Structure formats: C-alpha cells, structure tokens
Length: 386
Image (cartoon, rainbow, N blue to C red; front, top):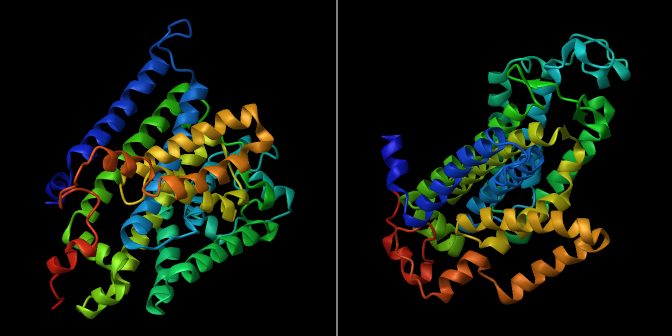
C-alpha cells in the first residue's frame, strides 16, 4: 500500500529526477572503482567525496523546501537538525575508534580522556551500535522539531517571528555545543574517524558506498516529499501556506499539519547530516552557525521554492560555484553569495526551475509537485474537517 502510494505520486519531472539520481548512484562509484587514473572517464575519489557532500546539502535544501515552499514556514534553524543528525553519526564513529585513539582508551573518546573524564556519559550509551545511532539520527532532530513546533504552532507564531525563533534555537545550540562539559568535543568537535560498519572510512570502496547511499536517500526523500505534497494532505498544506486563517475557518487543525511537516522535514535534515559526517570526516559546533541555515534558504530560493527539484539543483550549483569561487577569489565569496540572493530575489523570484517553467509557458496541472495557490481555486477543493 505504501509503495503504491509513493508510485502514484510520481509525475514526469520527479520520475526523471529520481532516475537520474539512481543512475548517478551507480555510475559514479563504478567510474571511480572500475577505471584507472589514466582512463578519461575516471572520477577521482576526492571529486566523488566532494559531490557526495553536495548531495547531502541538496537533501537539506529539499527538507527546507518541504516546510517553506509548501507550508509557508521559513525556518532559519534547519542547520540545527542537520548538525544533530551529524553529531549522532559522529558519536557512533567515535565509539568505533576504540583503543586505536591517541590515548588508547577502549571506551572513552580521545577528547574525554584529554579533559579527564572518568567514565562515559549516559547519553553516549548505545552509540557503539549502528542501528541505535541510525535511530537517533531520526529521533533526536525529530523530537526537537516536535517539541519546538508543538509550542510554536499552538501559540500561532508565524512569519518573521517564527523565523527569528528558529534562528535563536540554532544559536543556543551553537553556544551549548561549544562547551567542553557538554560531552560532545567542545569547539574541536569530533574527527579522526576510523571505520563505519567495520569498513575503513577512508577506503575508496567505503567512500563510493557512502556516495551511493547519499544519492539513494536523496531519491527516496524526493519520492516521499512528492507523495506528501501531491496528496490531499498536501492540498491542505497549500491552504495553510496561502490562507492560514481561511483554512482554519474550514475546520482544519492547522497546527497539526504544520507540526507533522516540520517533524518530517527535520528528520530528513538529520539524515543529511548523518551522511555528511563520514564523507567530510569531521563534525563540530560550527555546523550550528546561523549563517549555515541562511545559506540553505539561498540554495532553495536560487533553485526554486515549492518545486522540490529546484532546491536540489540550487544546492549543487551554489556549492559548486562556492568551491570554484573561493579558490579564485576567497575574500569575495560572501559578497558574491549575498549579491546572488539579491539578484535572484529581484529578477528570478521563482528561482531557476520556476522561471524556466514560466518561460516555456508550461501550465502545471493539479497533479504536479507544485500545487496551485488558493487564488486559483484550491480552497474550493478543500473539504471541511469532520
């Protein structure tokens, strides 16, 4: 039943995007492992790892698009969910080091030995098992989103006030994780990972597997997001985005729709963070920086808000440009990023994907990923809640 529900949600563009991601998940690792450096088709490991990082950013941007593009919640705190998922994976990777650390302690990570910790904190229990760490990657961001959203949405906090509160939450976590007594590595964070699931994390085969897993999870998340926004639930989300008071008047518990979407989005961001850490090799409190969450908004806006595919494209293009531009003009990158956001806001308000669709005069049917607004008559389709 779930599979049929997901498959029914796929339109032509989403199906093509998923097919491309699955093809990339197979083709890139094959070209990395099965071809030699002398082969013109060979993809070096560092390039594969770099694009693997871009794909985790794309998953994070997709998570933001789900709440911002289709529910109208401009979250400036999604970097926090991303970082929490990364820390959950980092804790597992640190437990796998064991006695191979600098201080040779079979239980305590090196930073705990350095800080004279005598025993492992209770919240580190279970992270020596991958299944537990994978569960926490979902539970911790999801639980934080649930608690935050429960109070914020029930209090009817909206608009810029909600955005400010989400950014304040991220900054509070940044300050907390910088403390050495929190037990998460302080300002240095966690690094020097050795293995994941028994495989050397630096080996080409492991890096290829991580890249493939990232592309597959991105494709799966795109499918789930499409299923959500193209369902009856998704039509109500559009109502919440375009006319919340009208949707509430029809009898819908708006806060429940917001809360569910916010929690699902946070869990997707947590998965992105968990896939990011073993590919980059480090996680530290800098991932909580409010600027990181603002960058995610820029990626989504550049690609095209409320298009699902647009944020993925925007994250890859902006970060690819960042890699190139910082190498050529490192001191001007932040100015370029700010200028890009201003230009997109002024001249491409619908982003790359939305502008292209508008240019070619494509009138999107009701069944596509981007639902029409209430002004087009969606409110007539919404039935009162029983």
